[in-house]
View (spheres, rainbow, N blue to C red):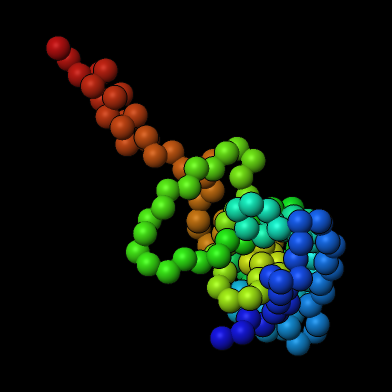
Length: 176
């Protein structure tokens, strides 16, 4: 299945020198991505990337920028979000077989993404980067008031040791 925002980059066109690639999602692609990721809207999704061949695979570095609208998990109010994420990926050819080769990664290691065939998909990489940057539990400014009105205590108000504190007071006052 082809992703909603597919921008394949043919492997045979990528050399050892760095090459800049800029991609932008079209309105229909953004609408499909919003549906896929449970967003109210994706108003902008673009990436400025540099692509080059390295010993371990195809290195992709750059930035993904997006403007999206998430729904508050409490009130369903729209929350506009701007995303500006650094990308550092290494596309590695997927191997056949059940071999579990151990790969040592250093501190500066890139996130690895397996690929098969003659291309890597920069659009899908940008879409996944955007999705990973989203707050999984977005809350609007009104969320705390709505929760308080519904009787939900905030973390500051919860005193999980109250029952134990009362027991401690009883033990202190117990005659020996």
